[in-house]
Length: 197
Image (cartoon, rainbow, N blue to C red; front, side, top):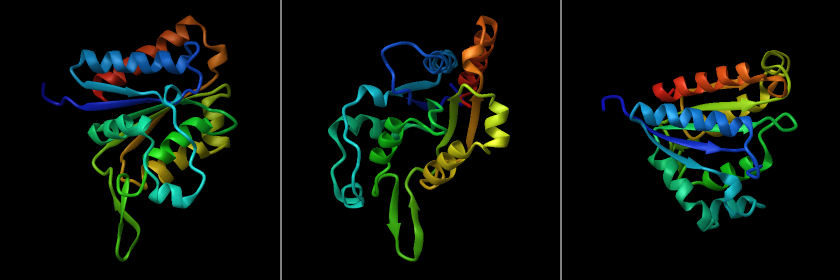
């Protein structure tokens, strides 16, 4: 199929004991993408057993935990990444941050380059979308709080390793969504999936 893309969905919700809105949104995106002929893989950090990094030396010279090898391989395979997570204490959950720290290691996500303080970007040529659910109004988060954690993720993690462009979808007031509101968001994510956007 013309325009078919390879998509990796990273489900960053730490709670896998029950279905949350972020899970439903990810499923809707995946279904839309698959229906349009795109290839879809998923990574769920909460289902993987890995330690948190505790030193720069460990990050630079330690081995990637075996449980994360498939996730890192899937990132290398993907042309488009989707990161789903709930806003917790104004940021992504710690488990997702720990996952990103582990997989985005030197030699994979970027390479040191003489004369270039930023290094060579190892994941250039990929795009991404960040989908964040939150209790507050999305407009409040975007304009009053300046979407600081999403902007940090875009600039300091995804942009640093060459992933661009990065788009965002902010879903606010999730606790107040009625069935019609939920269905509207599911349809919107399914449409994004069909376009691999």
